[in-house]
Length: 176
Image 1 (tube, rainbow, N blue to C red):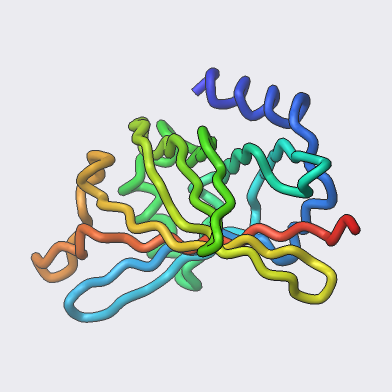
Image 2: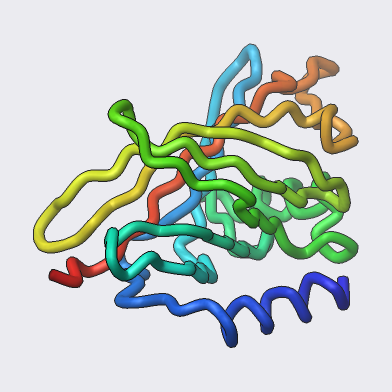
């Protein structure tokens, strides 16, 4: 945990974060059970980027979100999710890119996702679009709970699906 805090501090000191827009940035998870599905949203992201000034492109990005900041609209469900995710032991979800490639089809981002004390390499496609003088980077990431040794909660003796979808959106003011 100390390593996470130190990494978060170093990221904020050494990487520039030009015009990060908290008002349009969020991480959302969606979970499903045979009886219903739900989502939780956090708008409390810490984002650090390294920019290529000539190309006006992100070269590296790190995102940290505290698991306690997700809101599903039902406080008892949020408390239960915090318990399931061992939020006191593993309070943060951390993503740190190792590669950011701009392609004609979008941006391919590879990096390390640290979740529930487990670090795994992931790859996702990111879409970039300009909306109201902001650059919005968005994408979707499938996460298998069992890959991160998370015991799937159950309702009426039926466990939730192993697959949790994570949607993210990070915005920056247009710098041109």
